[in-house]
Length: 250
Image (cartoon, rainbow, N blue to C red):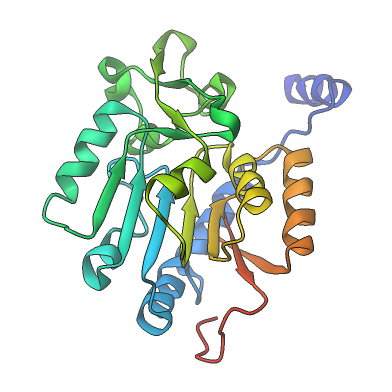
């Protein structure tokens, strides 16, 4: 009875409650799917010769990280961006012997608008699962939706840089791979990138937390800029129409 009441209230407010089984089943299916993000990345690095990549939202470089082993195996020039201080320290430690890796302790944002991020207080992180370090966000509601208690949320002031200024700072005039995982701000970053850069890399971004109106704008822009796209797990894979698929990486 209470569930029906909650659903009616959510409907009036313009929200729709999603069955948690749908999310859990989708993630379980992803674990056993024939074609995974890991397999796709292996094909791309092995066959497409990825020379330069940018990873936005690198965290500590290990936890739930899809690029670590490929960066260490294939030695591309890798610019890794992580705004949270403790994560950034761990990130540098986990790549300490890699001469091909460069580090940026900043948040990527449109017009440098983000200077505060919300995270779980380190003193309370033991109360949650391993995923908790990966849900830092510009939006406190994102943490609350992951069942984090508001009293356990902490603000951290961060440096900020736009994607265009980042590319200029590291003199990136060729970019083969752009990976973004920023817990909801991903769409804004890619829209800004597509609008202000002529670079045409393979783009991988987490799409599930992007607001719907931003997501629609992103898809329209990808079509306008002649990118094809599809999803694997919780990621949107976007590649320019001229992308060389003659080697059957997909």
